[in-house]
Length: 317
Image (cartoon, rainbow, N blue to C red):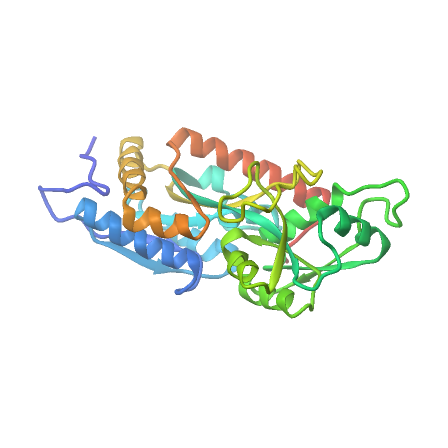
């Protein structure tokens, strides 16, 4: 077996650079995460790490680039929940199957979603929102068709069944998709929509300056960044939980010793204050899983969101 060189110093010969594929445009949160990881990881390992943005098609462009690269651990992909677990369930034909085509390396971090409403909304709790939704339709924004905010809103609607409700399957919610988190948040602030599920970090600044309100956090525990906001379970809806999570994968067929070395290097880099402090302050939970644990996690997330997509006839096409 050839020596393990991925993300490790190779004294025999210069190794080609590590390419870190990012399925989103430059400047966004995933790109910022990738660039800081490349800086910290490169400094720790002595490797040159190049961030290569390949946005578009729900991650298929970046995924295809990974599948056309050698399975040697020198091309990696940094993706999030949709790219690694749910998008392949939303398209009739998709360029890759995460469980089949990718070698899991490790998670990086996660952030819970929060149920936000405009500052002048008449509702002051999840209970109020459900009562209003049983009486009249609610417009809810999302970051796009098939986004995690879209999927979680459908889960929420399906959990709000009431015998006397005008709509037997739950509250009346009309989906208004936007192209990303920023325009969806602008629509909420401007009261163009009634509800938005978005990441804690995306909404917290607007909660603090009074432009929106947080009704509940879709996580098992409250967040110290919004300590007065109850969980969805505390509000009566324990099954309404979701976090956007980020992870790194290689191409399937990458030798396990190489994958394990990359996992070890990345997990160590996550504890570097330059990386961990910045993202924890933004509301992320930073931490890496082992390879087997991450593989199981991708499988469980894919199955869960696949069922949500099927049960609610959701499509991104």
